[in-house]
Amino acid sequence: MEKNQEKLKANQDNNIEIKIASQEQLEKIQKSPENNVEISKRDIESRTEEARVEAIKNARSSEIKSKDSEKLLKQSATIRTAIGKKHREESYKKTLKQVQQELPFGSRLFSQFTHNAAIEKTSEIIGKTIARPNAILSGAFFSFIATLLIYVISKNIGYTISGSETIAAFAIGWLVGLLFDYLKIITTGKSS
Image 1: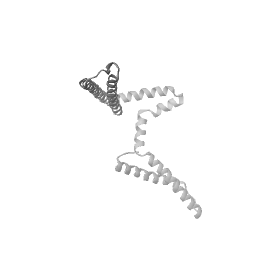
Image 2 (image 1 turned 90 degrees about the vertical axis):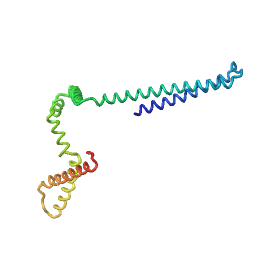
Image 3 (image 1 turned 180 degrees about the vertical axis):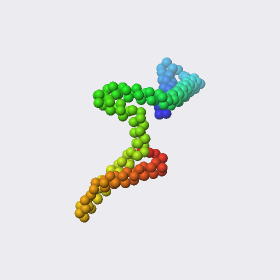
Image 4 (image 1 turned 135 degrees about the vertical axis):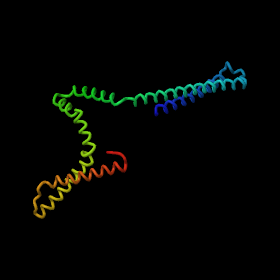
C-alpha cells in the first residue's frame, strides 16, 4: 500500500517535472536568437497545447502503470495467503532440521525431544491454559509477599512455619493471576 502511494507520488512529481520542462523548453525557444523573429501567439498556444497533451498522456500512462502494479500487489497478496497448513508445516520441519544439524550433540537431542509433535502440542495447551505468564508471575509475587509477611508475623509471635505457606500462597496468587488473565480476555478479547 505504501509502495503504491510512493509510486503515485513519484508519478505526480514526474508529471509536474514534465510540465515544468515543457514550459522551460518553450521559454528557451522564445528567447533563442534564431527564433527571435516574431513567434505568433497562435504558435505559442499550439506548442503549449502540445506540451499539455504530452503531459496528460504521460500522466495517464503512469496511472495505468500504477493500477497494474496495484493488481500485481493484490495478486501477490492472494498468493501469499494461499499458502496452506501443509506447506507451513513442511517449511517448519525443514528449517528445524537445518538448525538442529548445526547444534552440538546434546542440544540436538534435547531439541529433538522438545520438538516432538506430542510434546509440542502438550506444551502449547499447558501454555494457553494453566501456565500463563500472568498467572505464574502473580503467583510468585503473591507467594513472596505472603511468605514474607507470615514469616515476620510468626517470628514476632514466636510460632514456627511449616513450609507449606509458600506453596499455598503461590496457589492463591496463581489463581488470582488466572482470574485476571481470563477477565482481560473476556473484556478486551485479546490474550497476553
